[in-house]
Length: 79
Picture 1: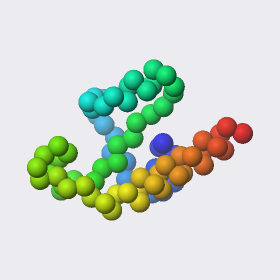
Picture 2: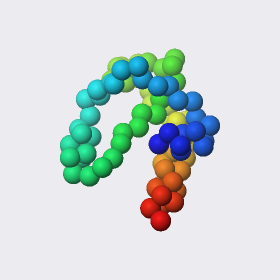
Picture 3: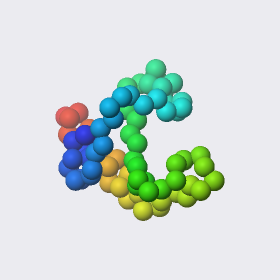
Picture 4: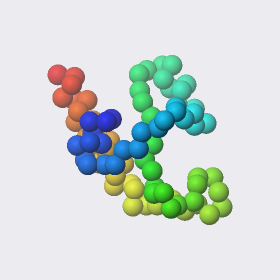
C-alpha cells in the first residue's frame, strides 16, 4: 500500500500509535491475508458519524487510483 501511495504522490500521515477502528475487518483477516487503508477526506471536515459530516465525493478518485495501483503491484509481485 505504501508503494502505491508513494507512486501516486499521495500525502501519507503516519500514526504514532495503532488506531483501533470499530471495524469488522479483523474477522476477514482470520480467513485470508489483507490490510485496511484509511483515505482521509481532509483535515477541515467534520468527523464521521456526526450530523455535520457530509461525504467528500472528491476522494473517490483517490481511492480508485490507489486500489488500481495496488492491483497492478500485486499482479507484478505474483509473477
